[in-house]
Image (cartoon, rainbow, N blue to C red):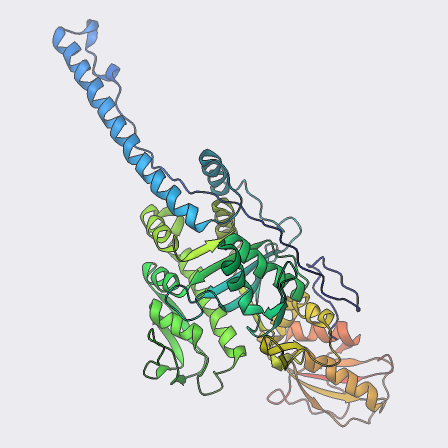
Length: 497
């Protein structure tokens, strides 16, 4: 098991953890957005008064000016009321959660815009949001969650980790309703309650049980809303890591499109193209796994965030209004408008640029496939693993995400010639996603494990220091040719392991 290294998390689980029963605990706030422009300063009647009290003509002009003033004021109020009413109607559809008065919603929005709102988890150093993607009406299984990502935000260090959760992970429905694949939990909530807030909370609670993290927020968007939103902000610039083609990408008629092809390199994508990039699951060139698909989805989310900051969205009321119209039937969240303002300002003020990507897939060695009497093909903890191991994966997501970015190659030797010790250390490093090659070493019998860095891999070196209690050397171990083109870090186990 990988040791817990992420000090930002406050979750402590014992090794005998058994997932608790789910209880329905609605959360959220339902708030409407209202933004009125300053109509400008109107000239008062006093500014038109002539010296000496004025003539009858000037008094007549005053009367005309008063009428003009009242007509303009009435027009401004009428148009403002229409804007507020439209925004209120749209926000009722978008913002799921508890009800409040209209003026309460406006006040909360203004507080968010001026930095007076604090997000749940912000004072504890971590904000968790469950991101869900669904097909939406008109698609087969419209409310099955095609995308499930837990976003964890560390405001103080300006870091975000995205952990993609496989759709086939086994989950338990609330209220003793049985076990299902985790991608069906949101759909079950919609079918049974007809309420987006309840369905979102069901999905969040199922993810809480899996991850061991507290998840106060959720946001769900369907395919149509995603495509229109991307087009509205002018498309996304995304770097394709590997060229691939998908000959089984579904169309809108339960068939397939002609092969969808992506070439390696930077591409400007419209909404349709970005959705294909995120959803493709049958690509060649090693792009057909849930792991690579999850990484592509996370890449799209980051590109969307970058574009919102680039266009300075909050200064463009027309675009906000258009996006509200798009999101009204395609996007639902228990984040309030004020909390969304706070998130936007955090991303902008903290200049968050570190996005770490992980996938809870078969490659982690934590989850394995099996069959279930009602759910069919599912994923559960592998033999010898527990939910506590999976929760450590989420808790250590920032450390593991950095290791994944560095992609270090490790040479591992043992100066004590203890095969079981070597195997245990190798297992710890491989579980963290590192590439490990065994090194035959018998030169010295070191009292302490040592590590030498041939190429700069700071996060990986720090991880090895902590997990193996290693001492860092400035020169390679005696007799080892640490060729930087072949190895990044050399580790020789000592008696302390």
